[in-house]
Length: 378
Image (cartoon, rainbow, N blue to C red; front, side, top):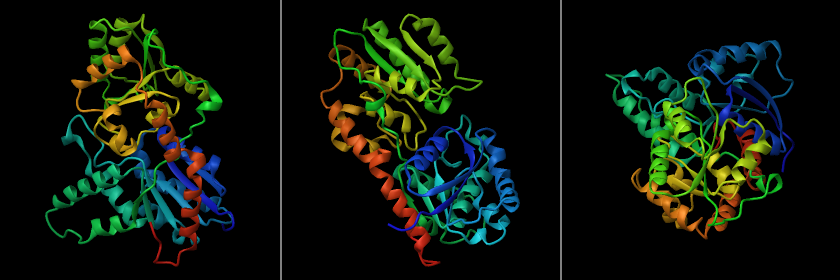
C-alpha cells in the first residue's frame, strides 16, 4: 500500500449514476479527491464545452499536486488534454464510461448525431485507461464504433478498435449496500398483497409501458398487489405514468422521487419484487440496491442483467420477453418470493458492495500512477 494519491475529478454531468459513482468512490477510498463538477443538464453542451471550462478553471486555480485525473464519457478528453497547461496534460488520465452516444437508444435513429459518438471514440484514444461499467457495455460500444467507422468513405484510420480494446477494461461501479443499517427488510408473507417496485428514471429508455401493461394484466387476473414507483423524474415523463395513476390510485403506496437516502432505502425494504423492462441499461445500480434490500428481481434477459445476476439464478430472475413478465408476476403474487432470494442478496453484496471492493479501485489507481510512461495497464 503506497502513499495517498491526490486525484483530480472532472465530471461534466454530476447527477444520476455519475454522481452515485463518484460520491461512493470518494466516501470509501483511502485516497484524496478534488472534485470539479458541472450540473447534470444539457448533456450535448457538456460534451462540447466542458473541457474548455475545466481547463480554464484549472489555469486559474491549479491544485498543488495532481497524481491522477479521473473523468467520464461526457467530457471530450481530446479537447481537455490539448487545453490543459502546466504539465497537467501529461498526468495519467482515466475515463470512466457510464454510457456512450453510439448505443444509447433513440426513438428515431436518423436523429443520431454521430459527432458525439466520435467524441467518445477519440476520448478513448486520448485517455491512458478507459474503464467501462460492464462487459456488455464495452462490447456494445466496440461493435457500434466498428459500424460507425465502416461508414467512413475513405481514409479510415487503421487499428482504432484494437487500440481502444488494449487500454479498456471493465470496472463495475461501487454500490452502497447499507440497507441492513438503514431499515429492516420486509419478510415474505403470502397473506399480504405483493409489493412491486419500480425504481428507475421516468424516461423512455427505461421502457415503462411493458411494466404497466404487465401490472394491468395482473390486476385483470384478480391478483392483489401494491405499487411503489420511485425514481428520478423530469419535465416530460412518458404519458403511461399519468394514465397509471388514474387506474391504480388505490394500489399505489408511493410514487415520485425520494430525496432522502434513508427514506429511499426504507421504500425498497418494504417491497417484495423489483421489476425492470429497460431497453437501455449498461449497469443497473438501482436494481442492485433493491436486491440488497431483499427484493426478488424480475429482469429482462438482455443488456447488462445476465452479467450482473449469477448464472445459477437466471431461471428465477430473468424473463425472456414482455409476454412472460405478467406470468412471472402472477406466480410471485400467488407464491411469494423465491426461496433463493436471500442467497442471491448475499452473492450480490459480495460482488458489488463498496466496502468489499474499494481496495481494488485504490490499487488500480496506485498502479496507474506508479506505471512507467507508455506501459500503463488497463
